[in-house]
Length: 456
Ligand code: C2O
Ligand code: CU
Ligand code: CU
Image (cartoon, rainbow, N blue to C red):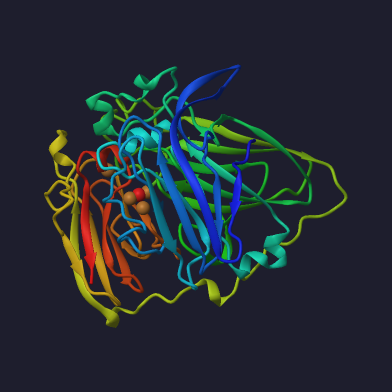
């Protein structure tokens, strides 16, 4: 399994130039057409610490406009920072400056294009890379002793020229999917590791629309972190569902020699997050028309050949410490409760709205006050699942109408299943500015399922 190049901050600064350009990338014994940052899939990994400044120059070598978003980072959305309203013309470049607060959450974040109308196309083409924010806890012996790897999941269209990025109106409405589930651009790569070692995988679901249910055959699986901050302690689990945009850090202790497989089951996006059962309960519609595999299809993503060694696995840390679990504001601190309606009934393009409206960059849809907390009831009024994503301010899931337990993780993306309501609590702390929230099925976002928020 390939690993992307690491670009590591030094003395609080990281200066990088990313060039987005059409590229021939390795595919089997030949090549295929892709869009890349700096020529590779995924792009370089940007490694930062809380308090660092990232100076990033984006060079647009594509023949269409693009821009860049640092998904999940708690940084200013305005001016020359994480401003997704700017557009960079072909041949032009832009320098951005991202200042991470000194208490920025640790975790696995990522960068991708965010030019409204072509986000799904450019991401599916291959434009994505990982941002790691490591803090003092990452230096603790139990975590430092693990073998860390980046795993970027994608399902690009496979072809020889740019026309492979064109999809049908039906695929845009369903959310485009590709034929194969790749890790770091490779089909079922493998790696070797010694029994007694512990793998630590930073996974990013960088597909435009595909939802993975991930499990591990041949070893135990622990969830160490989700989108934002580590869990107070690693949790043993059977499977982890990742919608587009979501991340997970997994610990996999390799106890005995043999073979360990990371496996993905395709999840229905028609109200199917609760389980693998059925084809989505939509009379067999499944994800027909997306271009991807039917729900329930199993793909082996990665094989680990575990070789013999004399050591026994280091214990999984039982506590990662109170520093990890930032306090959730109490109900008494909530100044406002809103209902946000995702989508509308019907199967036409008119269903891709938020509160009945399509995205309009110049309009402010929601205004909130800096350093206040709000509860949002995310109501999915449509027949398809919509993974809700908010820029800049992480939130907690408080309540779900579908009976799944609210989870103990800070998130920036949460699935709202068809017909269900998910209630989240958002502390609008530290940073003011104007940005967006949207469905992370990126074709839905491109079709208009995005809205603006201004925090003042
Ligand atoms: Cu990952 Cu607004 O995006
Ligand atoms: Cu984002
Ligand atoms: Cu959607």
